[in-house]
Amino acid sequence: MKTTQTSSADLAAGSRTFEPWAPDGAKQLLEELGRQILYALAPDCQYPVLSDPARHSSVEREFNESRTRHGTERGGFVVIQRWEYYERGAADLSRESLVIESYGMPGECSFLIDYREARLSVNLWGPAGAVERVLRWFDRRAGKTPDDEVLAAKAREAVISVSRGAWAPAIASAKSVREFQPDHPDALLALGVASGATGDLDTAESSLRRLLESNPDHVDALYNLGNVQLALKDAKSAVETFRRALDVDPKNHPAAFQLAQALELHGGPQAELEAVEAYERTVATSPNPGGSWGYSGLDFTERAVAALSRLRASR
Image 1 (tube, rainbow, N blue to C red):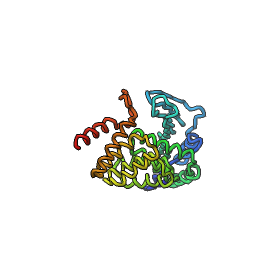
Image 2 (tube, helix red, strand yellow):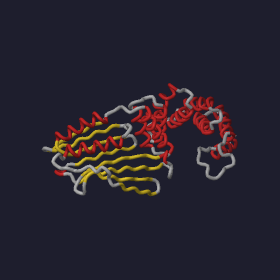
Image 3 (spheres, one colour):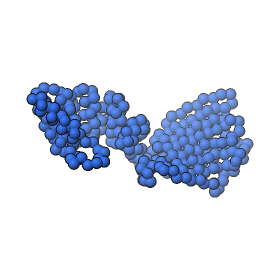
């Protein structure tokens, strides 16, 4: 949880942030929070809360959105609920966000509640005493440690972000999970891969090693640790790590190719002979031997064939 508060004259700004945060009934809780803030910051104004708020929904490509107004034309707050799809129309692969924003409040008072990707933040501007009361109420109602299901969903978001090459969201999601579960395997793997991709090799290496402490045969952790060691020019360690990955999964095509790369970096006649064997193993385990159109997985076959031609020609 993060907290900030500043003041100016009789007005004060306050905020709270909880991450990860995703309790049951989040929408109802946040609407209640919106009403509490509304009445606390502007007690002299009577904004009726609509029992059956007007709802507006729209569908545009890869998201759905609904808007609900609580109040009158003069003032109140609007609830904007939005679902964005990782894949078009795939409801089970959607990301939900909820924004509650005030409008028309007196004396420059305002508030904004933002809830997305299991992260909740509240920002207030109003009389100092009212801001303090609202934040205390918020702490009592919303300041809960997330359960395992919430953390698992957040870790899944980190993994999805890695698969899409969205490194910053992957790192943020993984770190938020590790705040409560430091050894969560998916969070450690996502943090290791994303940190390596962004050049933070120290964090990448420490995260992957920590994962391997509890799961020494985690082939994805071994593969990515080997890649980090290659980036660090530690050929000897990379060779050992890729060999461990192949011991776990003898047909691991990417690990075979990276083992060959590490052996070439290591250098020497014996390492060159072993690199040829590793490149041959790469070709033999090709995931797409026919070169099928549209294959999008890791395929090092062409690079392995070119490397074999180069090494054989140099003998």
